[in-house]
Image (cartoon, rainbow, N blue to C red; front, side):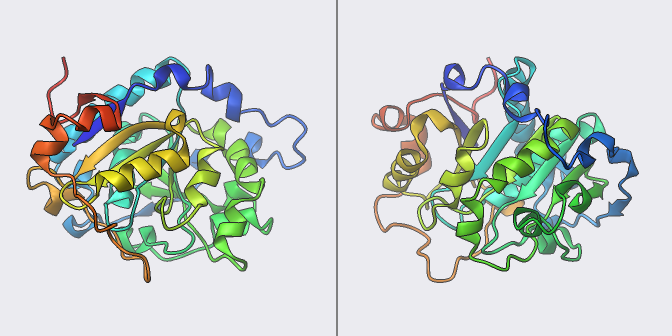
Amino acid sequence: MNRFLDNSKNLPESASKSLSSVEGDPMKVEKAISLDQISPEEVQVLPSSRIVMHTDPRSAGADRFRFLRMCLREMWNAGKLKSLQITSPLPQEGKSTIALNLATALAEGGKRTVLLIEADLHRPTLAEQLGIDKRAGLSECLEGRLHPASALRRLEPLGWYLLPAGEPTINPTELLQTEAVGGVLQKLSPLFDWILIDSPPVIPLIDSLSIARQVNATLLVAREGRTSREAIEKAIAVLGRQRVLGIVLNAVEGLDQLYSGYYGYGGYPATSGSKKLGRAETLNGPTARPALQAKRSFLDPPE
């Protein structure tokens, strides 16, 4: 399912130090609020949502997410990782579904506090995928019309929290380039063990680069048989190789019907028209590892 880049040495020494300070902030709602005070919303998680961590926990796809959780948890325990952006080179590569499953995996049934921020302000779809109503969220927070703590939604039985995209009144890309993004993360960080950010694709837009500068690391989602090697390398170059923690290879071995999928971005091509990644090439090809600098495949069992 996925490949990891050996970038752990380049991560910040302490994720908590980089995001948790709120001294001098006049809006200290986050210090007074308790997450237990947020009324839970019951979500009917259907198979069509593709959250296999909940709907099919014994599946191969769910097992790969547990493996990914194990690897990320090692860096979390070391204080090197807390905020993680999830994006993809191009549309239709399944990054939003990866984000939903990873949030569910990291929450561990409520043992950890996990927040998923929907930063795709151009085409937000998480509310529809979860079957919940749309409400104010990140856009209103970035515009200064809403405190982020008051926009949080507690989703059960998934066991994690959502900050939805909301409805921006100005250009979403300009909104995500402001310093307000860091301010939102700073206010919310003390409340959570993990913060995941579902961002737009890298190549059609520059939103992901703006967000990458505010978080500890980025996971890049590629889809087997669709994502070109050139698109992956371009996305890594745009984000900066030191910011890309790993690559998730989606839709492998027939698992795409369980947990892959993405929405279409009108006017943006799904692929670059160049050579696609196939299973044999991705795992065994002589040029795959030098190009992606991968040291280990998550398709293989842990050592």
